[in-house]
Structures are given as C-alpha cells and as structure tokens.
Image (cartoon, rainbow, N blue to C red; front, side, top):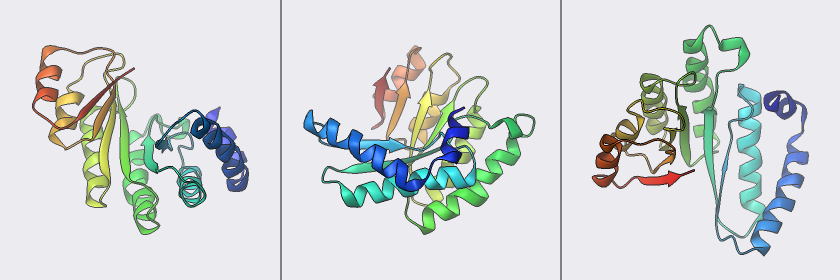
Length: 182
C-alpha cells in the first residue's frame, strides 16, 4: 500500500508535506534529522524519495542525512525472485544514487522473511563501493548474526534490537557501531 501511494504522489507534493513536518519538529527543538527511503520499492519511487530529501536539504536549516533503504522489503513482483530485486538495487539504483549524490547511508532490513544475512552483506558491500555508510535494521524479531556482521562491515548503527544475545553485545562492545533500541 505504501509503495502504491508513493508511486502516485509527485516530488513537489512530497517536498511540501515534508517541509511542514520539518518545521514542526524544528519548533520542538530537533537539531538534526535522518530521512530514509524504503517505501517506494522500485527504481523510480526510491530515487524520487531520495531526490525529495536532497531538495529538503537545500531548503532547511537543520542538518538532514539521507538513507537509502531500498532493501526494506521485497516488492510483490520479486517475492519469488529475490536475487533479481537485489540486482535492481545494486545495478540500477546505486549507480543513480551515487551519480546524483542522493544518500549518505545505505540500510538493509535483515530479518527472517525479509533480507538474509548474506543478502544484507551483498547490498551493504555494494553500497560501500559508492561511498555509502552502512546502517542495518536488525534483530527486530530474531537473531540471525546481523549485529556482528554489521559491526564487521563498519555500520554506523544497528537499529531495532528488540532481541539480543551475548554474541551481539560482545560485537557491539568491540565496535564503533551505535546500538539503537526500538
């Protein structure tokens, strides 16, 4: 539903809506913002979201960081061919993102029924080749080894962490990665 709505809305409308929200949070004292893509799940919509963020950066006084989260979920069209969607991210989205300087970070939702540990590593390594700093949504429902893998890839943060084990805690203790608890 979110991807369908994102495909239908214009960049100008998204900028207008976001500026209102940014003004509100700035009034409450917010000093910096991270905005993520991840609700387009196709080349056009993911790039549209990131272009909107770039426009917002030029219109707003507080720092805004852009995160590419194209690996948020597999679109329906790719449920039975996950590797094709990963190729779309790596071979089509990332070159555009790099050429237009649309993102600071790259994020993956590493979880059962979403992106596997191996898929996460493939996507993050591809993003790093374009200068994007890894971040990871991980351990929301299960422990797959994503925290340690994210730390070894130099992730800036691991987000969610609703379930942890001692291996995760040890990996975090020995890294510069920021654990963000949901």
